[in-house]
Length: 402
Ligand SMILES: Cc1ncc(C[n+]2csc(CCOP(=O)(O)OP(=O)(O)O)c2C)c(N)n1
Ligand SMILES: [Mg+2]
Image (cartoon, rainbow, N blue to C red; front, side, top):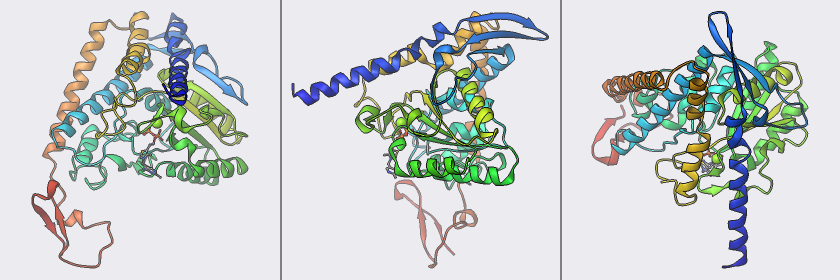
Protein backbone atom coordinates (compact mmCIF):
# COMPACT_ATOMS: atom_id res chain seq x y z
CA UNK A 1 0.00 0.00 0.00
CA UNK A 2 1.15 3.56 -0.67
CA UNK A 3 2.79 4.85 2.54
CA UNK A 4 0.67 8.00 2.62
CA UNK A 5 -2.48 5.97 2.31
CA UNK A 6 -1.23 3.71 5.07
CA UNK A 7 -0.51 6.71 7.29
CA UNK A 8 -3.94 8.16 6.60
CA UNK A 9 -5.59 4.89 7.48
CA UNK A 10 -3.59 4.78 10.70
CA UNK A 11 -4.66 8.32 11.52
CA UNK A 12 -8.28 7.40 10.88
CA UNK A 13 -8.00 4.54 13.31
CA UNK A 14 -6.33 6.72 15.91
CA UNK A 15 -8.92 9.46 15.68
CA UNK A 16 -11.70 6.89 15.74
CA UNK A 17 -10.22 5.28 18.82
CA UNK A 18 -9.87 8.63 20.54
CA UNK A 19 -13.43 9.52 19.70
CA UNK A 20 -14.88 6.39 21.22
CA UNK A 21 -12.73 6.63 24.30
CA UNK A 22 -12.77 7.90 26.99
CA UNK A 23 -16.07 9.70 26.33
CA UNK A 24 -17.80 6.50 25.31
CA UNK A 25 -17.23 5.25 28.84
CA UNK A 26 -18.90 8.23 30.44
CA UNK A 27 -22.23 6.44 30.81
CA UNK A 28 -20.48 3.78 32.85
CA UNK A 29 -18.45 6.42 34.69
CA UNK A 30 -21.41 8.59 35.49
CA UNK A 31 -22.24 6.76 38.67
CA UNK A 32 -25.63 7.78 40.01
CA UNK A 33 -26.96 7.87 43.56
CA UNK A 34 -30.68 8.31 44.17
CA UNK A 35 -32.27 10.13 47.07
CA UNK A 36 -35.73 11.51 47.80
CA UNK A 37 -36.32 15.26 47.64
CA UNK A 38 -39.86 16.50 48.19
CA UNK A 39 -42.30 15.42 45.53
CA UNK A 40 -39.73 14.78 42.79
CA UNK A 41 -37.14 12.02 43.13
CA UNK A 42 -33.62 13.40 42.90
CA UNK A 43 -30.49 11.79 41.54
CA UNK A 44 -26.84 12.68 41.90
CA UNK A 45 -24.78 12.17 38.74
CA UNK A 46 -21.00 12.20 38.30
CA UNK A 47 -19.99 13.94 35.05
CA UNK A 48 -16.22 13.95 35.65
CA UNK A 49 -15.49 11.95 32.48
CA UNK A 50 -17.45 14.41 30.34
CA UNK A 51 -15.29 17.55 30.41
CA UNK A 52 -11.84 18.64 29.21
CA UNK A 53 -10.76 22.22 29.88
CA UNK A 54 -8.61 24.84 28.19
CA UNK A 55 -7.61 27.98 30.12
CA UNK A 56 -10.49 27.57 32.59
CA UNK A 57 -11.64 25.45 35.52
CA UNK A 58 -14.03 22.55 35.07
CA UNK A 59 -17.78 22.99 35.54
CA UNK A 60 -19.16 21.12 38.57
CA UNK A 61 -18.73 17.40 37.97
CA UNK A 62 -21.24 16.20 40.56
CA UNK A 63 -24.69 17.48 39.67
CA UNK A 64 -28.17 16.83 40.98
CA UNK A 65 -31.02 16.07 38.64
CA UNK A 66 -34.56 14.82 39.08
CA UNK A 67 -37.03 12.38 37.62
CA UNK A 68 -39.04 15.17 35.99
CA UNK A 69 -35.94 16.73 34.42
CA UNK A 70 -34.65 13.45 33.01
CA UNK A 71 -38.04 12.44 31.63
CA UNK A 72 -38.53 15.88 30.04
CA UNK A 73 -35.14 15.57 28.31
CA UNK A 74 -36.00 12.04 27.19
CA UNK A 75 -39.28 13.24 25.67
CA UNK A 76 -37.65 16.20 23.92
CA UNK A 77 -34.91 14.07 22.38
CA UNK A 78 -37.29 11.28 21.38
CA UNK A 79 -39.59 13.85 19.72
CA UNK A 80 -36.67 15.25 17.72
CA UNK A 81 -35.47 11.78 16.72
CA UNK A 82 -38.95 10.83 15.51
CA UNK A 83 -39.31 14.13 13.65
CA UNK A 84 -36.04 13.62 11.79
CA UNK A 85 -36.78 9.99 10.92
CA UNK A 86 -40.19 11.06 9.62
CA UNK A 87 -38.55 13.82 7.55
CA UNK A 88 -36.34 11.14 5.99
CA UNK A 89 -39.43 9.11 5.05
CA UNK A 90 -41.24 12.17 3.67
CA UNK A 91 -38.17 13.07 1.63
CA UNK A 92 -38.01 9.62 0.10
CA UNK A 93 -41.73 9.91 -0.73
CA UNK A 94 -40.86 13.21 -2.51
CA UNK A 95 -43.07 15.24 -0.21
CA UNK A 96 -40.00 17.16 0.93
CA UNK A 97 -37.73 18.47 -1.82
CA UNK A 98 -34.45 20.34 -2.06
CA UNK A 99 -31.73 20.52 0.55
CA UNK A 100 -32.44 18.73 3.81
CA UNK A 101 -29.93 18.06 6.62
CA UNK A 102 -31.01 15.83 9.49
CA UNK A 103 -29.90 16.07 13.13
CA UNK A 104 -30.55 12.58 14.53
CA UNK A 105 -27.66 11.60 16.79
CA UNK A 106 -27.00 15.17 17.87
CA UNK A 107 -30.20 15.73 19.91
CA UNK A 108 -28.47 15.99 23.30
CA UNK A 109 -26.65 19.14 22.17
CA UNK A 110 -29.86 20.94 21.30
CA UNK A 111 -31.83 19.79 24.34
CA UNK A 112 -29.00 20.23 26.87
CA UNK A 113 -28.23 23.71 25.58
CA UNK A 114 -31.83 24.82 25.83
CA UNK A 115 -32.04 23.52 29.41
CA UNK A 116 -29.33 26.01 30.41
CA UNK A 117 -30.74 29.04 28.55
CA UNK A 118 -33.94 31.06 28.35
CA UNK A 119 -35.75 32.31 25.27
CA UNK A 120 -34.30 35.76 26.00
CA UNK A 121 -30.87 34.38 25.06
CA UNK A 122 -30.19 34.20 21.32
CA UNK A 123 -29.28 31.15 19.24
CA UNK A 124 -28.08 31.01 15.66
CA UNK A 125 -27.01 27.89 13.79
CA UNK A 126 -26.26 26.36 10.40
CA UNK A 127 -28.61 24.67 7.92
CA UNK A 128 -28.98 21.63 10.29
CA UNK A 129 -31.69 23.49 12.13
CA UNK A 130 -34.99 21.59 12.47
CA UNK A 131 -34.42 20.64 16.10
CA UNK A 132 -33.40 24.13 17.20
CA UNK A 133 -36.67 25.40 15.73
CA UNK A 134 -38.56 22.95 17.94
CA UNK A 135 -36.47 23.60 21.04
CA UNK A 136 -37.03 27.37 20.57
CA UNK A 137 -40.76 26.82 20.86
CA UNK A 138 -42.12 26.30 17.35
CA UNK A 139 -44.49 23.41 16.67
CA UNK A 140 -43.94 20.11 14.87
CA UNK A 141 -46.69 21.05 12.38
CA UNK A 142 -44.91 24.31 11.55
CA UNK A 143 -41.61 22.52 10.92
CA UNK A 144 -43.21 19.84 8.73
CA UNK A 145 -45.18 22.52 6.84
CA UNK A 146 -41.98 24.44 6.13
CA UNK A 147 -40.22 21.25 5.05
CA UNK A 148 -43.05 20.42 2.64
CA UNK A 149 -43.27 23.99 1.30
CA UNK A 150 -46.67 24.81 2.80
CA UNK A 151 -47.93 28.20 3.97
CA UNK A 152 -48.30 26.89 7.53
CA UNK A 153 -44.51 26.83 7.86
CA UNK A 154 -42.44 29.33 9.79
CA UNK A 155 -41.29 30.96 6.53
CA UNK A 156 -44.65 30.34 4.80
CA UNK A 157 -43.12 27.40 2.97
CA UNK A 158 -40.62 29.56 1.12
CA UNK A 159 -37.49 28.83 3.15
CA UNK A 160 -37.58 25.08 3.57
CA UNK A 161 -35.26 22.94 5.62
CA UNK A 162 -32.26 25.26 5.81
CA UNK A 163 -34.03 28.45 6.74
CA UNK A 164 -36.05 27.88 9.88
CA UNK A 165 -36.44 31.03 11.99
CA UNK A 166 -38.26 31.92 15.20
CA UNK A 167 -37.69 35.55 16.07
CA UNK A 168 -40.28 35.51 18.89
CA UNK A 169 -37.93 33.32 20.95
CA UNK A 170 -34.66 34.69 19.58
CA UNK A 171 -33.77 31.94 17.14
CA UNK A 172 -32.02 33.50 14.16
CA UNK A 173 -31.90 30.50 11.84
CA UNK A 174 -31.08 28.44 9.75
CA UNK A 175 -28.00 29.68 7.70
CA UNK A 176 -26.77 28.03 4.52
CA UNK A 177 -23.34 29.60 4.17
CA UNK A 178 -20.88 27.52 6.16
CA UNK A 179 -19.47 29.56 9.06
CA UNK A 180 -21.38 32.78 8.27
CA UNK A 181 -23.47 32.46 11.39
CA UNK A 182 -20.40 32.68 13.64
CA UNK A 183 -19.94 36.35 12.81
CA UNK A 184 -23.70 36.96 12.98
CA UNK A 185 -23.67 35.34 16.43
CA UNK A 186 -20.98 37.72 17.61
CA UNK A 187 -23.23 40.54 16.36
CA UNK A 188 -26.15 39.14 18.33
CA UNK A 189 -23.92 39.12 21.43
CA UNK A 190 -22.98 42.73 20.72
CA UNK A 191 -26.71 43.54 20.84
CA UNK A 192 -27.03 41.54 24.08
CA UNK A 193 -24.21 43.54 25.64
CA UNK A 194 -25.53 46.85 24.34
CA UNK A 195 -28.92 46.19 25.92
CA UNK A 196 -27.26 45.37 29.28
CA UNK A 197 -29.97 42.81 30.05
CA UNK A 198 -27.71 39.88 31.03
CA UNK A 199 -28.60 37.79 27.98
CA UNK A 200 -26.11 35.75 25.97
CA UNK A 201 -25.82 34.61 22.36
CA UNK A 202 -24.94 31.09 21.24
CA UNK A 203 -23.46 30.71 17.79
CA UNK A 204 -23.28 27.12 16.55
CA UNK A 205 -21.02 25.78 13.81
CA UNK A 206 -19.60 22.46 12.68
CA UNK A 207 -16.12 20.97 12.71
CA UNK A 208 -15.87 21.82 9.00
CA UNK A 209 -16.84 25.45 9.60
CA UNK A 210 -14.27 25.60 12.42
CA UNK A 211 -11.59 26.06 9.76
CA UNK A 212 -13.25 29.16 8.27
CA UNK A 213 -11.45 32.50 8.53
CA UNK A 214 -14.48 34.52 9.58
CA UNK A 215 -14.77 32.46 12.77
CA UNK A 216 -11.39 33.79 13.90
CA UNK A 217 -12.34 37.35 12.99
CA UNK A 218 -15.51 36.97 15.06
CA UNK A 219 -13.52 35.49 17.97
CA UNK A 220 -11.05 38.36 17.88
CA UNK A 221 -13.76 41.00 18.08
CA UNK A 222 -15.72 39.05 20.69
CA UNK A 223 -12.63 38.79 22.90
CA UNK A 224 -11.63 42.42 22.36
CA UNK A 225 -15.06 43.63 23.42
CA UNK A 226 -15.83 40.91 26.03
CA UNK A 227 -18.97 39.95 24.14
CA UNK A 228 -21.33 37.53 25.92
CA UNK A 229 -21.09 34.90 23.20
CA UNK A 230 -20.65 31.13 23.41
CA UNK A 231 -18.99 29.72 20.30
CA UNK A 232 -20.46 26.22 20.10
CA UNK A 233 -18.62 23.82 17.82
CA UNK A 234 -20.74 20.75 17.16
CA UNK A 235 -18.04 18.28 16.30
CA UNK A 236 -19.81 15.44 14.53
CA UNK A 237 -16.41 14.48 13.06
CA UNK A 238 -17.31 15.08 9.40
CA UNK A 239 -17.81 18.09 7.13
CA UNK A 240 -19.84 16.56 4.28
CA UNK A 241 -17.69 13.52 3.40
CA UNK A 242 -14.44 14.85 4.85
CA UNK A 243 -13.29 13.47 8.20
CA UNK A 244 -11.99 16.06 10.66
CA UNK A 245 -8.45 14.68 10.59
CA UNK A 246 -8.27 15.43 6.85
CA UNK A 247 -9.43 19.05 7.17
CA UNK A 248 -7.96 20.23 10.48
CA UNK A 249 -4.28 20.32 11.41
CA UNK A 250 -5.34 20.56 15.06
CA UNK A 251 -8.84 19.17 15.64
CA UNK A 252 -9.03 20.23 19.31
CA UNK A 253 -11.65 22.80 18.44
CA UNK A 254 -12.15 23.91 22.05
CA UNK A 255 -8.56 25.23 22.00
CA UNK A 256 -8.93 27.03 18.68
CA UNK A 257 -9.92 30.30 20.37
CA UNK A 258 -6.26 30.52 21.52
CA UNK A 259 -6.79 33.38 24.00
CA UNK A 260 -10.44 32.40 24.70
CA UNK A 261 -11.21 29.78 27.40
CA UNK A 262 -12.54 26.53 26.02
CA UNK A 263 -14.30 23.41 27.19
CA UNK A 264 -14.74 20.08 25.46
CA UNK A 265 -17.95 18.35 26.46
CA UNK A 266 -19.38 14.90 25.81
CA UNK A 267 -22.12 16.04 23.44
CA UNK A 268 -23.93 12.71 23.73
CA UNK A 269 -24.76 13.34 27.39
CA UNK A 270 -27.61 15.78 27.79
CA UNK A 271 -26.71 16.65 31.40
CA UNK A 272 -23.07 17.31 30.51
CA UNK A 273 -24.20 19.65 27.72
CA UNK A 274 -26.56 21.48 30.07
CA UNK A 275 -23.94 22.00 32.75
CA UNK A 276 -21.25 22.95 30.24
CA UNK A 277 -23.49 25.66 28.75
CA UNK A 278 -24.66 26.84 32.18
CA UNK A 279 -21.05 27.18 33.30
CA UNK A 280 -20.03 29.10 30.17
CA UNK A 281 -23.08 31.39 30.33
CA UNK A 282 -23.00 32.14 34.08
CA UNK A 283 -19.30 32.13 34.92
CA UNK A 284 -18.12 33.94 31.79
CA UNK A 285 -20.73 35.61 29.59
CA UNK A 286 -23.17 36.85 32.23
CA UNK A 287 -20.25 37.78 34.52
CA UNK A 288 -18.91 40.16 31.86
CA UNK A 289 -15.89 37.94 31.20
CA UNK A 290 -16.39 37.65 27.49
CA UNK A 291 -16.61 34.73 25.11
CA UNK A 292 -16.10 30.99 25.62
CA UNK A 293 -15.58 28.18 23.10
CA UNK A 294 -17.49 24.95 23.73
CA UNK A 295 -16.80 21.86 21.65
CA UNK A 296 -19.45 19.17 21.79
CA UNK A 297 -18.24 15.72 20.80
CA UNK A 298 -21.24 14.33 18.92
CA UNK A 299 -22.21 12.30 15.85
CA UNK A 300 -24.71 12.41 13.00
CA UNK A 301 -26.31 9.11 11.98
CA UNK A 302 -27.64 10.26 8.63
CA UNK A 303 -25.43 11.35 5.77
CA UNK A 304 -24.54 15.01 5.43
CA UNK A 305 -27.77 15.72 3.55
CA UNK A 306 -30.39 13.63 1.83
CA UNK A 307 -28.22 13.18 -1.25
CA UNK A 308 -25.45 11.56 0.82
CA UNK A 309 -25.96 7.93 1.87
CA UNK A 310 -23.35 8.60 4.57
CA UNK A 311 -21.60 5.29 4.23
CA UNK A 312 -18.86 5.88 1.62
CA UNK A 313 -16.43 7.81 3.83
CA UNK A 314 -17.08 5.95 7.10
CA UNK A 315 -17.82 2.35 7.91
CA UNK A 316 -21.16 0.91 8.95
CA UNK A 317 -19.30 -0.54 11.95
CA UNK A 318 -18.36 2.94 13.08
CA UNK A 319 -21.97 4.13 12.88
CA UNK A 320 -23.34 1.12 14.76
CA UNK A 321 -20.58 1.37 17.41
CA UNK A 322 -21.62 4.95 18.15
CA UNK A 323 -25.28 3.90 18.27
CA UNK A 324 -24.47 1.13 20.73
CA UNK A 325 -21.96 2.91 22.92
CA UNK A 326 -22.92 6.57 22.89
CA UNK A 327 -26.48 7.14 21.69
CA UNK A 328 -27.86 10.06 23.75
CA UNK A 329 -31.40 8.69 24.01
CA UNK A 330 -30.32 5.16 24.94
CA UNK A 331 -27.90 6.55 27.51
CA UNK A 332 -30.68 8.56 29.12
CA UNK A 333 -33.10 5.64 28.93
CA UNK A 334 -30.61 3.57 30.93
CA UNK A 335 -30.14 6.34 33.48
CA UNK A 336 -33.91 6.65 34.01
CA UNK A 337 -34.47 2.89 34.25
CA UNK A 338 -31.44 2.30 36.52
CA UNK A 339 -32.67 5.03 38.88
CA UNK A 340 -36.06 3.29 39.05
CA UNK A 341 -37.88 6.38 37.73
CA UNK A 342 -39.62 4.47 34.93
CA UNK A 343 -39.63 0.93 33.53
CA UNK A 344 -38.56 0.23 29.96
CA UNK A 345 -42.20 -0.43 29.12
CA UNK A 346 -43.32 2.94 30.49
CA UNK A 347 -40.70 4.70 28.37
CA UNK A 348 -41.93 2.77 25.31
CA UNK A 349 -45.43 4.08 26.01
CA UNK A 350 -44.08 7.64 26.13
CA UNK A 351 -42.40 7.05 22.77
CA UNK A 352 -45.63 5.71 21.28
CA UNK A 353 -47.41 8.93 22.31
CA UNK A 354 -44.65 10.97 20.68
CA UNK A 355 -44.99 8.97 17.49
CA UNK A 356 -48.72 9.68 17.40
CA UNK A 357 -48.10 13.41 17.92
CA UNK A 358 -45.56 13.49 15.08
CA UNK A 359 -47.95 11.63 12.75
CA UNK A 360 -50.75 14.08 13.59
CA UNK A 361 -48.42 17.04 12.90
CA UNK A 362 -47.55 15.58 9.50
CA UNK A 363 -51.24 15.27 8.62
CA UNK A 364 -51.82 18.85 9.72
CA UNK A 365 -48.90 20.01 7.56
CA UNK A 366 -50.18 18.08 4.54
CA UNK A 367 -53.51 19.86 4.90
CA UNK A 368 -51.78 23.25 4.72
CA UNK A 369 -51.87 24.65 1.14
CA UNK A 370 -48.85 25.48 -0.97
CA UNK A 371 -48.26 29.25 -1.19
CA UNK A 372 -50.54 31.10 -3.60
CA UNK A 373 -49.61 34.17 -5.66
CA UNK A 374 -50.29 36.48 -2.70
CA UNK A 375 -47.57 34.76 -0.65
CA UNK A 376 -45.18 33.47 -3.29
CA UNK A 377 -44.36 36.90 -4.75
CA UNK A 378 -43.86 38.56 -1.34
CA UNK A 379 -40.43 39.20 0.21
CA UNK A 380 -38.50 39.10 -3.08
CA UNK A 381 -37.20 41.72 -5.48
CA UNK A 382 -38.45 41.52 -9.10
CA UNK A 383 -38.87 43.93 -11.96
CA UNK A 384 -40.76 42.01 -14.62
CA UNK A 385 -44.29 40.73 -14.65
CA UNK A 386 -45.27 37.37 -16.06
CA UNK A 387 -42.54 35.42 -14.25
CA UNK A 388 -43.44 31.82 -13.63
CA UNK A 389 -42.99 29.57 -10.65
CA UNK A 390 -42.91 25.89 -11.53
CA UNK A 391 -43.93 22.91 -9.46
CA UNK A 392 -41.39 20.23 -8.67
CA UNK A 393 -39.68 18.64 -11.67
CA UNK A 394 -41.11 21.56 -13.77
CA UNK A 395 -44.21 19.45 -14.27
CA UNK A 396 -46.65 22.32 -14.08
CA UNK A 397 -46.62 26.09 -13.77
CA UNK A 398 -48.08 26.95 -10.43
CA UNK A 399 -48.11 30.74 -10.30
CA UNK A 400 -47.49 33.57 -12.77
CA UNK A 401 -46.49 36.92 -11.25
CA UNK A 402 -48.90 39.82 -11.69
C1 LIG B 1 -18.99 28.97 2.32
C2 LIG B 1 -19.50 27.61 1.98
N1 LIG B 1 -18.64 26.69 1.49
C3 LIG B 1 -19.09 25.45 1.19
C4 LIG B 1 -20.40 25.12 1.38
C5 LIG B 1 -20.88 23.70 1.07
N2 LIG B 1 -21.05 22.99 2.34
C6 LIG B 1 -22.25 22.87 2.89
S1 LIG B 1 -22.19 22.05 4.35
C7 LIG B 1 -20.54 21.82 4.26
C8 LIG B 1 -19.80 21.06 5.34
C9 LIG B 1 -19.87 21.70 6.69
O1 LIG B 1 -19.50 20.77 7.69
P1 LIG B 1 -19.59 21.09 9.22
O2 LIG B 1 -19.24 22.51 9.45
O3 LIG B 1 -18.80 20.07 9.95
O4 LIG B 1 -21.14 20.97 9.58
P2 LIG B 1 -22.08 19.67 9.61
O5 LIG B 1 -22.71 19.57 8.26
O6 LIG B 1 -21.24 18.50 9.96
O7 LIG B 1 -23.13 19.96 10.64
C10 LIG B 1 -20.04 22.38 3.08
C11 LIG B 1 -18.63 22.35 2.68
C12 LIG B 1 -21.26 26.11 1.89
N3 LIG B 1 -22.55 25.87 2.11
N4 LIG B 1 -20.78 27.33 2.20
MG1 LIG C 1 -19.41 18.34 10.92
